[in-house]
Image 1: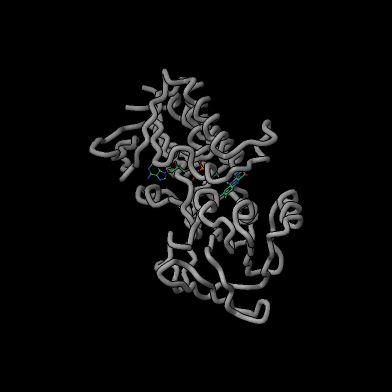
Image 2 (image 1 turned 45 degrees about the horizontal axis):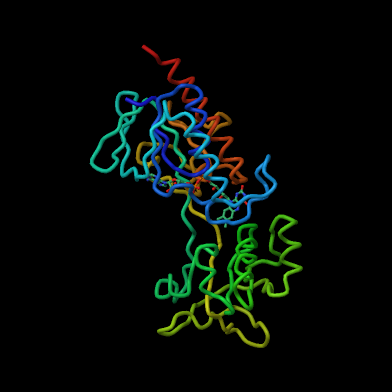
Length: 306
Ligand SMILES: Cc1cc2nc3c(=O)[nH]c(=O)nc-3n(C[C@H](O)[C@H](O)[C@H](O)COP(=O)(O)OP(=O)(O)OC[C@H]3O[C@@H](n4cnc5c(N)ncnc54)[C@H](O)[C@@H]3O)c2cc1C
């Protein structure tokens, strides 16, 4: 029986694992995608203590730090298929095994919110993409667009501009809202053009992939915008189903409700990072919540000893 089972191998899970190890908790960290979402950006400038590093470097640093406590922590790149709560402990199904733990730190993050318009499913991965860092390279000297107005969308546009000839940012509201340093980079970048107050209604293409999108307003005299690729950054959906299956309380967006100790409504079940109901979701906030969760798990285990 582990003291704690950490589900999720993103920055939040790694932060929680490092602290669980320091506190001497016997822990298993299990996560499907090592490093998680942060590995999809090449520019992190807002993690205190590091002026600039790639997302992959940040994830690797956090993982290495957690591995300093290998004496206490086991690592598995795998998926938790189901969760159960029994007699005040938890049972997770991982592959063919059932793993038992006194507490859970749930840090499963999110999945992309999809742009549900005609043409999306037909051209997904054939011109429609969600990761600019992974797929931007294929659009060398081509015309692309990114849908979204967040800081992540702006950073994706900057990544795309390193490869593409032209990058449009299509945003449904009046003004995109990146952090100010990224806004300045967008304004200075001669390849990037913002199409405000516009929605994509349809994605069109042929055998070769995407050829255009239909907008709900005229741009340069036409509702049809010619493109070779469309990237989507319209937010994320919390991966909270496993938690929900054992009665963990969610908010209306499907995010796990936590308090300032990263506790949920279920004793011994903690949650942290992008999957929870916090307003501002960043690597540093996820790591901090993960550390609080590890400390909460430590207190819980001590208080319930014997
Ligand atoms: C393009 C982009 C740029 C960004 N830039 C920045 C930035 O500059 N600075 C910053 O601070 N933040 C940035 N963010 C936000 C940041 O990436 C996230 O806030 C952070 O990575 C969330 O970490 P997490 O560990 O909570 O979740 P995730 O990173 O999503 O990790 C979740 C983990 O859980 C695993 N998992 C899910 N379900 C299961 C299961 N059933 N079984 C096992 N494992 C499971 C996943 O495989 C993954 O390992 C950016 C985000 C994007 C998309």
